Image (tube, rainbow, N blue to C red; front, side, top):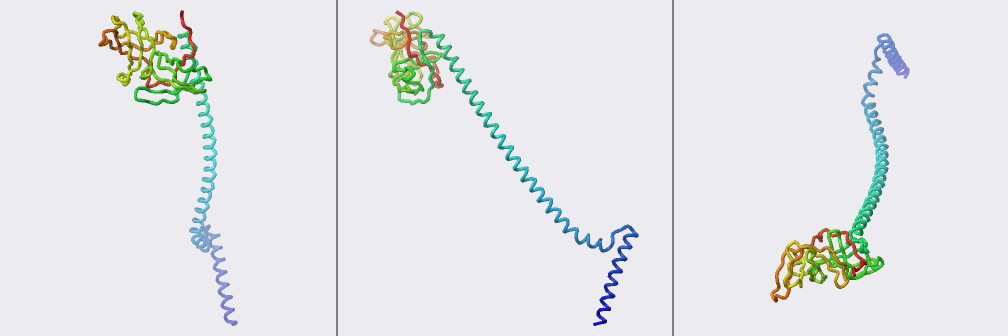
Length: 277
């Protein structure tokens, strides 16, 4: 037992002297001691992994913070875009209203003897020989069945039914349409009517012209105002063909309207007009 203690003492003394010797050597030579060298070598991989892990978590925290900041910025941008969109819609509505009022003013200057109001086509339904249009004006606005409907290019139809805030209109091409007509150049009168055989070509007929009619192609055809149903001098279109009927008692003609029925969107309803004596 005493021998073992002496051996342990000698080993401890040897280790102590060795460490002290390494320290004195490192101090004198200015280099790392072997112990520190070995320790640094053993710990370097662990320190490297710990550093990488620390950098990863630091980057992760930074990324999360950046992501939250980016989300907040995106939310702010979305709110700003939404506000801009609302302003654009409001500006578009104002421009649309101004355009409508300007067109209505121009129409009233053109037709000084007419009371009229603007209307929008909100629906349409095609039939075998015509199209029925639904407009966003009704009896509360003074609309009544029989009112003429026009655009800048001329007459496009007539109101056939009306509710409080809506009305229905048939076009002048419809097979049920009838109106007194006048040829501007020579004042010959006749009757305009829709015709199933000419509807698909966007045309209508002018019938009951005089037997010795002097009408010609390209003559302007307007409403005559006879009967008081529709105002006079509403432009309809121009004659494209003319012939004498088989019975020899009258002539008939094909009339091509100038209005564009395909893009019909805004129209003007004549609610009242003055009849010249």
